[in-house]
Length: 492
Image 1 (cartoon, rainbow, N blue to C red):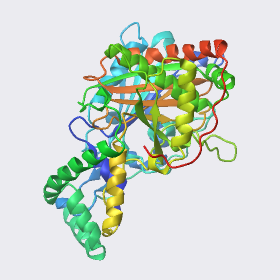
Image 2: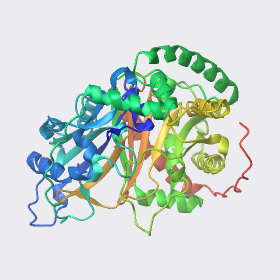
Image 3: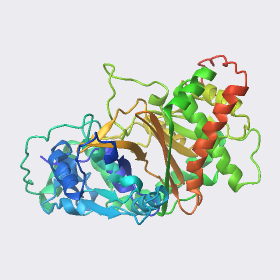
Image 4: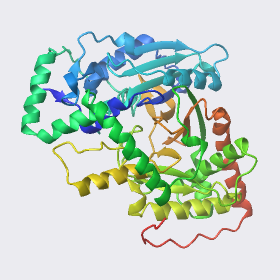
């Protein structure tokens, strides 16, 4: 029995192309200076390799390659890599002196710009030494198709522990299974197709075989009509952030105190996530002012957010400890970048987010395959999926925010002082933003197309400036919380 990629996983696997890389990542900052006095625990390259080897039994896909089926008759399958070499996937790097954050960001940008090797398991990890004050960084890069749900965590989550003295897992002697031959895969695909003929049609139309070329002609026509309808119905504002992307990336990050955000939330009687969104609105406003002469008073930018950011859930009162969360329901909201008064901007952000997070028109399940997994669908159902796809494209920037705090983590017994997630940068999106709440810090990460957002490090610096604006406004402005908007459907 072959282990076939799910429709979602296969979609992300085939998304890789010019200007689009379907991988995401995580950056962990580890600091041995935070160890108790006298503790000589160290995290060098050999210790990291041993740790990953021991934990890989929790992430079996990290020793598997994706094998495509002849003529695209079925979705690809997961196959154990007989030539698996962990030293290829875990690499050692170092920053030149003085090992600044700017040098680290540039190194990460170069790594994230490169596509992953599809002939090997689709992940990499870098131990980056030479940061200031004796710190190191761990960068992971994982293809989105490996992360098929809660049973398939990202490798950075696998190597982290909630306490410093976590024991190693029992030794697991891994032996690769015999790979299926091309003939067996073809026969298996045909057998499945006889049982589910609709899925065969789906594979031929949407897969990687020669028949898929015919579909591309129709697909371009559908996209043309979709784009026209979208412009009439619910288009996002024009923005350079919707430029066609290249493969060259920039990366930047910033941290601020959770205490400061709590102070703003308390002063203005709003939620923590409202403050996060207001900070990002201020960041985008400053960036627009740096590239344009002015920003119109009513100007907005449109962003996607996970619905969980508005309705945080904690199971049994404990954090899940996850920082790479994929899939799930999203909603689209407007960011009032044209408003120059920080307090008013925060009020508008909170009201709009509350309204749109309850509007079915602004909901999206994220990027989905065009056709379902099994069989054909009625025309009406197909139309619903097609229009859902149109609304997915009606935004300027995706924002990924955590719905709960990540507690203090350790890698090999060494404290982690920073956790930043690096989102996937999709086609026609020149900027992606992620926000994590780690320990007592709120950590922002930005990835962008180098050809479009050339000043990304400045955008990261705007995080502190935007927060300072809100703190100052909280001292000077008498704020009245707006009435909660009704739940009537959004008619925009």
